[in-house]
Image (cartoon, rainbow, N blue to C red):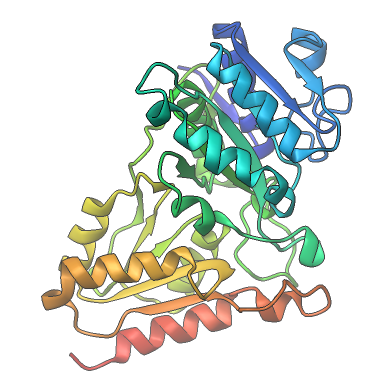
Length: 341
């Protein structure tokens, strides 16, 4: 299969284009996704190619967007609604939790809800407290839905195709700080492009990255680092700078979680650091820490560390103090590496 260099924006656009060509039941909807092509240009050109009945703009009502998409899914379509920023998903939360996540169960399997909800999330773009949130843990807590977070263009395309084809609802979080290039946490350095990154090489046609399979970004024996989204790139940079023999795992999907890969790694290394941008209390890192403790207790040689955002609204002027950047990640890695067994 031929490949070409893509940004994450282009890869996501390609995934929707491929699926809309393959399946006439796939439709795209959301605020400004049609004529304008989305606030981040992820849906650019889809309305022009497939028409206004396949890619269309909606009113500014997240509850209505999700509610309408659930109805479409129940009647056989495969809708791909976009919530413009993760911060605005909350008005649609009841529809997701009470309707989409329950439809298969409450109908005794007579109805399914093949729904892939795209949501740009996370900070790093000076969006302030209303355009920077990372609410992924809320959705991992709700049974009946899957939660996906890519970190590279290739994974973004393959995972989105798998999400669209899934017969149950999938929440698809897109790290918007990585839309145009990987971000290693050094905000004061020149931005990087996907053009010279190996994961910027993406298959042009149809391909899937299966849900529930983590990716070992780099192998190591001294510790295990668990991350997803933007924080994969931050962790990778810090590991290299500190010259650590650390195994870095990109979770890719939070639900279903590839616990087997995590367990095998921690049993090998005996140490674990968890990194995510979301707030600390009840963040997904807490679940990861509990799982590692339950499954790998007798193999652990040091306490599990979490590096996260703080339990505050995302600040605008102090964004880089909130963001778990290279300094905080590096300090945690060093503490775990130096802890006595």
